[in-house]
Image (cartoon, rainbow, N blue to C red; front, side, top):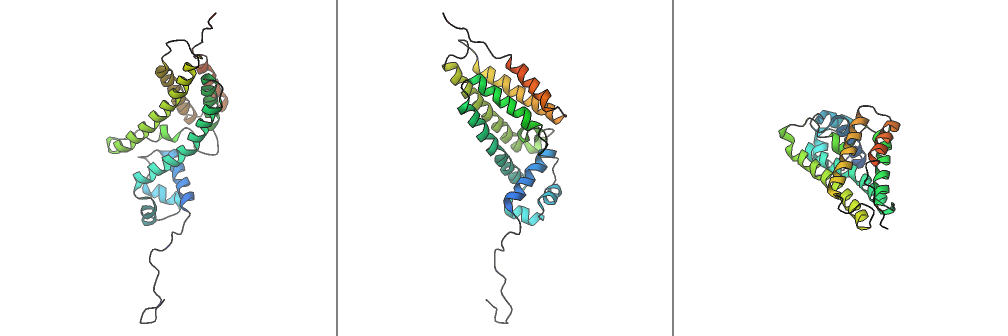
Length: 210
């Protein structure tokens, strides 16, 4: 199509000149390494290979990009944990497998160490209260999923009568977060597995009824 003067008309809404999914994966890596507040827009655009206008057009502002990155990060991990919880024969085995998987994943060399959900709001100020609240809600949802699996085990008679399943879920969530910090400080998979095994020795023993 041409204008009256014979010059071609530029099409409106030019297609993006980058792979949005690949750019999002690179943003995850940056946020994971540096945390939310410490990550700058220049860090993101450099890693994602795009300019600021393209970033804003594709993802919105930094906060929206971060929350989308967190959701993408959680998708695979949520599926993995759900699979373990569905397949493990007991609640104890389910928690054991999750911690052992974490020992491997948290120290994997193919991505930053630790966990994006735990590390991203470290040293955040009040200016990032909305982001911190979102991350806290996501961690609470993970804890609720853990408690629900422990509750199933309690209902099946796998735990002593009267076991505080909320406290048990809180304990193993705390163990996981401790493993995250260990991994970030350089702990080996072997060291993390040892932590997981020590934590499992605290699992309440069921009392067989005669």
